[in-house]
Length: 77
Image (cartoon, rainbow, N blue to C red; front, side, top):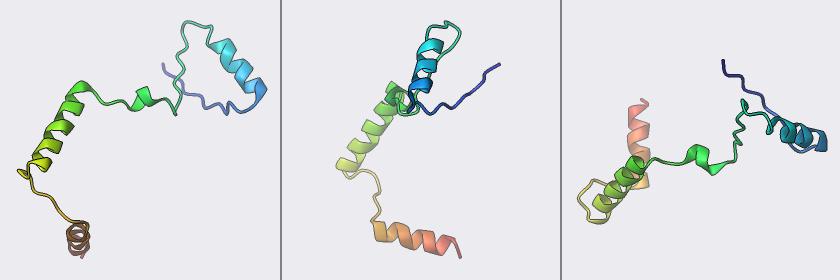
């Protein structure tokens, strides 16, 4: 069973509690601000690089912001 607890770490008491539970081997702490939670895999990075290269080489279709807005407006009707 996985339990999620949100703790506002701005107080000294909260920080002391966090320091204490870090000593327990069955508890894993994930910080929402931690970049590794949002890291891309190597495969995702590779896919993005390929898409970027196609865009740079003009082998993929690109749309202006005005074209996108017009498409969104017409699709919502």
